[in-house]
Image 1 (tube, rainbow, N blue to C red):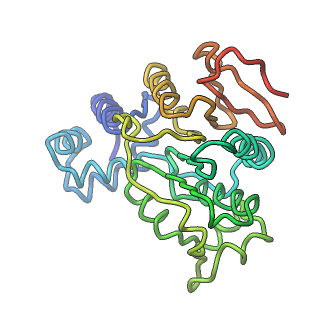
Image 2: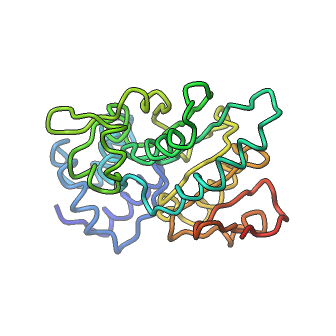
Image 3: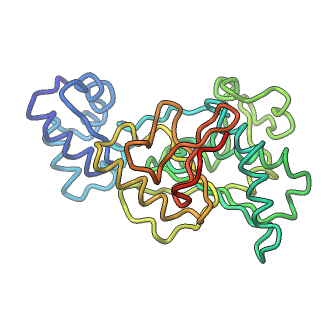
Length: 282
């Protein structure tokens, strides 16, 4: 189904309202490849009708639009360096900082826009490798995503050979995964560290937190500047005073002001927005 200029205008409004993604005229191909089938299955003659029905209260149709238009690209240990920073800098620092507190063994993570869950399970593996007695710790890794289909797979913790082949180190495979027919399934001991729920990052999340670490990678690149700025300031409010924020390898938050000055370790970059004014780590 070809996309007309009027279609593009209405779809851009719909998608931004539903999930914050900014579409422009160059994204016509994306609309045709991802939403044409949704429109056809819904019996819509054009994309304007699709928008009208989605906005009129058809929740199932809105869910299908979001699932189709959002990017589900992810893999285990994506980009590598954030997980090295976690292992060698962030987690040891958190443990030291909490050593004499009433919550000395409580560490909370949030993977915002977690897609199908590989990022969450990668963090769980790092923790399991670093903390041999992890069962005695109060570890909570929350994964959230706007796409129902992504959350469903993340909860199942089941991945194909192809998905496992994208980033899962061979020495971790049998330790943390088990065969499930033709697929691989996350072992219960690892799964127990993680929980998933559907969340829209445009909506309030003041009921969450505080978190010691937040991963919000490769999602804000699709937002307009105002939505992006608002998101990261709201994320900072969910961090502890010394909390750590990780963004995508191609992202930078330096335009958000000195509060978001980058810090570096093990060739990885992280932010501590609630510790503004500190020197950049080396």
